[in-house]
Length: 225
Image (cartoon, rainbow, N blue to C red):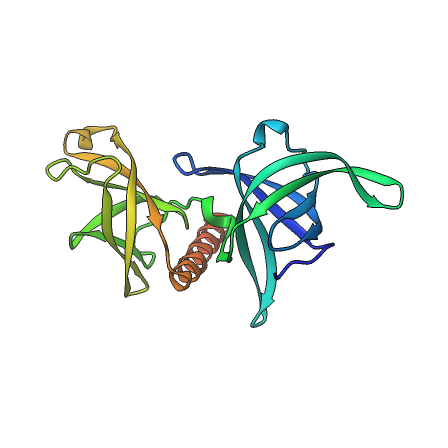
């Protein structure tokens, strides 16, 4: 494994894709092998109601001059009250049964950006350009015509254009909501979650979101009165 005893990790306890919220808690690795990983009690502490829950252990690796975050899926199986750390010292610890393999993970997944027009970020559904309301590495919310309704839980094949380059993206519809104002009769909003987003696309989208964010902050800071 990439982590060893003493490594600092971030434990993801909960994903809320619908509201784009994430529960992340810090911990230290005590011991590990292919069958179990023992970590310190998290900060803030993890309660016993989390026993049996699927979790993700995330950590940073330095690759090609940049820090990259990876995640290991697992299940929290028990909280040990008297884990022997060294000598007579005992502490509370958490045991996780890991799944094989690792995957790229980004804790900025849930940062939502409301992109301005003509910012180099465009979304298409069935070759029709959608109006992006907000976007993150986890998904996108856009408006579309009620003449071609989208069903909840349906899978969509989208095209995400980043600086004139098109990328095929698969997504699942999480929520359909109404649009306020006079356009409410013609449009509705769809919030979708990206599925199996390629690492390259994640990196490009992450860079583009940060670039747009910087430009927006610069304009706000130096806007004329």
